[in-house]
Image 1: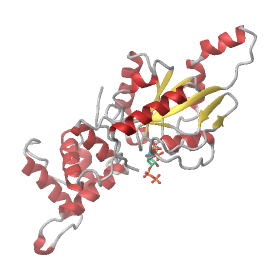
Image 2 (image 1 turned 180 degrees about the horizontal axis):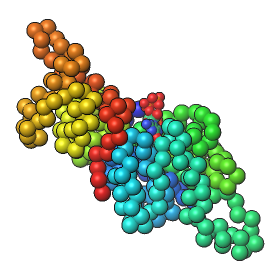
Image 3 (image 1 turned 90 degrees about the vertical axis):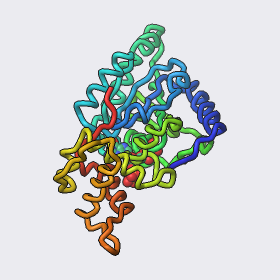
Image 4 (image 1 turned 90 degrees about the horizontal axis):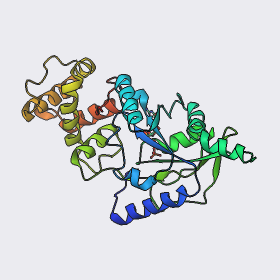
Length: 286
Ligand code: G4P
């Protein structure tokens, strides 16, 4: 669900997360492995107030594996542990509780030293809309938790979900806003499907996608759509539109008079990109 973030929503989202922080030991920050920067809330460090944190690069199945590893190194250099996962298939999700325990081992050891039986560690999943928070919660819970409403303020009574015997998770995630004041970020999020076309024009988004892909992933684009002529100049808009038209022709998106239906072609480009049909694509490098 796409929401409009107004200042009031942001304040409320922030307050909600900060209330939840009082209940938990660790924040689990979910990012999209294809756009780890653009899918990051610009104020996340301030909002999480130094809580222990695990970063998850989700949708790693759609991202370039080598770049994902570079991102993990980048976050490690900043002092954050991370894992690359696919919440939808469950790939590497089982490592999350182990990693969380590892990150909290000092706290757990302190409890044991005081003669206490350590309770399950408590976590909160946070991230911008569409990054895979609900999918991950369901995956960790091993069942479907009722939809939580992807909007700050839409919460029900909070409950703890047991993840194995040693970890618990709040059933409602912390919903953060994206860095939407940056237009480039908006287009990247639209390309990956995090922002839907109601907000940005489909042809504009597909045009932006072609510009991004023609530079770094021309071979994948050419192979998927049977293209033979790369754009001569990536800064030449006419050349990029020509590539979109080539794709439209290949896919039979024609209108009367033989003109290419760019809107239809744009829909195809974005759908196939988001489904991973062009291969594993990452739009941001550290
Ligand atoms: P949110 O709670 O953070 O808003 O995100 P949500 O779990 O609703 O996930 C948003 C979309 O991302 C969903 O697709 C979901 O299936 C997909 N997704 C989540 N994790 C992964 C992953 O690791 N890999 C891939 N490829 N996709 C993932 P959708 O099209 O909105 O819904 P649906 O088609 O699954 O019904």
